[in-house]
Every structure is written in structure tokens, then in C-alpha cells.
Image (cartoon, rainbow, N blue to C red; front, side):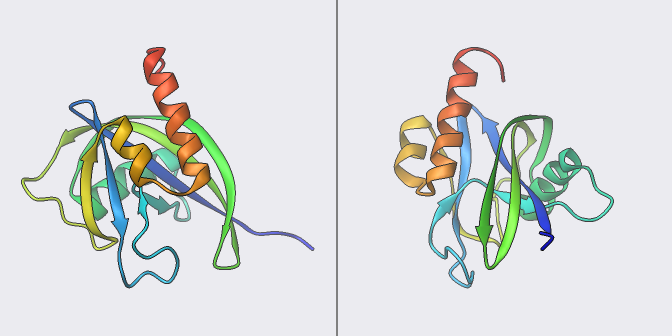
Length: 139
């Protein structure tokens, strides 16, 4: 049987030494109330790096630059298989008030805070990789 994979991106938006995380909206079928980094699904004809830029703007009103792919993994949700590409990017414009239809709450957090909030094991591993690469000046 042939599998169909969806491609999604998550993006670690950097601003003043912090990253943005969001608490999944209470109406979400899967993972409501769980903290995560923003993410979105690649649409047909779109390159993943374009998805990062589009989703940051559409979902959060934030302009980003320099998306860099630094990690990826496979996961399943709602009987669908995904490949998640994880990007680091820099915020170039942030509105006075960030609003997200996908999240009930948003926070800028440092490494220690992010470790406390994020609860998906794969995302915690990605967070660890992100900070290791930052320490080595690779991102």
C-alpha cells in the first residue's frame, strides 16, 4: 500500500534572543492547549521556505527573513503522515499586537522557558538541536 505524506514546516522565529511559541487553540481537534512553535502545511506548488514566510505573515502578521532548514522528522496526526521541516528565521517586522487564529496565547521565550512549555518529545529534541546549532554559530 502506498503512503501519502504531507509536508509541513515549523518555524523558530527569533527576536531579541527569544523564540515565539503558541498555545494551540482550544477548538483544535488534536493537541488543544499544548504549547508549540508555529507551523503550517506546504500547499501545492509552494516551496517549503515560501511556506515559512507565508505562514508567519498569515498566521501571525510577522515578516521573517533568512529561513534556514536545520532539522526534520516524521510524525502522524489525525490518521495522516507528515514530514516536518524545521526552520530558524529572524523577525523583520512584528506588529504591536500579535494575534493568531491557531493559538489562544503567544509568548516570546528563552531557552529555559521553551523547555518548560514545549511538550512534544520530537519538538523538544528539535529545540535542543536548535540551541546547539545557535551555540556553534551555525544558525
